[in-house]
Amino acid sequence: MWVRQPGSVDLQEGKVIIGGPFTMTSHLGQPVTEKDYLGQPMAMFFGFTNCPDICPTTLLRLTDLMSKLGSEADKLQVVLVSVDPERDTPDVLKSYIEQFDPRFSAITGTTEQLAAFAKNYRFFYKKVPLGESNYTIDHSAGVYLYDAKGSFSGTLDPHEDDAVVLKKLVNLLQG
Image (cartoon, rainbow, N blue to C red; front, side, top):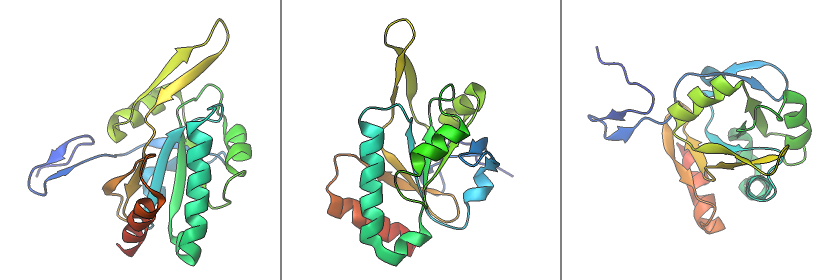
């Protein structure tokens, strides 16, 4: 029996497998795995709380899109995956994510957990020094979409028109 590996290609179905098993920590301080996110479609974003522009802009946009979805938004999980395990503790993430939409959640992990997560979920991040004691993090800026079964369904690009993004979310929610 052939088992799909994270980051592989399923040649029979013609799909790239983006995702896989993980163990991280939620913004509430609870351990979470990929299984905790099954059952509802998900929009997953990679970022960090000290980001000066892309991360808060993306989260504000997702907040606005949730309001445009109306009651359907309750069916969508929005998850911020922190790429800054040094600074983004669960308490820091909780305080940050609460500024957007109360339905949003965030996860973090150790440096090793994040590296494994990034490999399986095929996203880029790199710590960039800014002098002696400060740094920023370059990272993938798209939002990954997953269906209720946890299968990768596509992305939201930061440059797409809101109407296109909203249509993608509606299609995701309709399954």
